[in-house]
Length: 101
Image 1 (cartoon, helix red, strand yellow):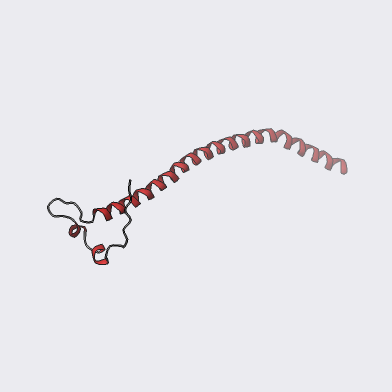
Image 2 (spheres, rainbow, N blue to C red):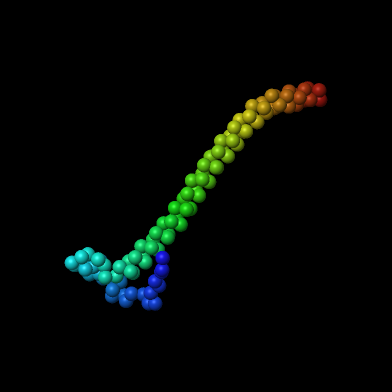
């Protein structure tokens, strides 16, 4: 698709005109269709960029949720594994205190 880049911006008085003043009363086609087309094209580009970002966000969110689930499971396993060890340490420290008396 060939892109036409205007040499100058539209005059300010035309930019300030209401949409009704820029449109043919008979057929409804804008007198400034090229300008409006370019503006819409820029909006589409911005929206495509935003969609790409959000698509990546969804994939990152899914991966992070899976990682969080895995880490939570590991934490629970370590907590369960740690309880008997903590009891042994506490028992050993109590025996050490008794033996020092």
